[in-house]
Length: 76
Image: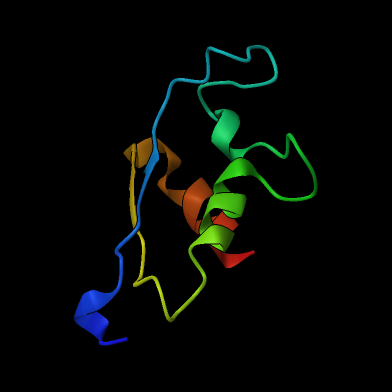
């Protein structure tokens, strides 16, 4: 598939961490928690975008306060 035919995933990763409080906090909202296994919801979403024949590099949309957490989890 030509590169311009690939889907560019946009991963929305915002939030204030209030819905699952006290497990989820402003510093570590639910998408960065391991709720359903060894990986966080954010990491599971990244995994679903790994098919190079279908997806281009994802665009991550989130708050600046979670940038390091997102980068750390992407590295894992």
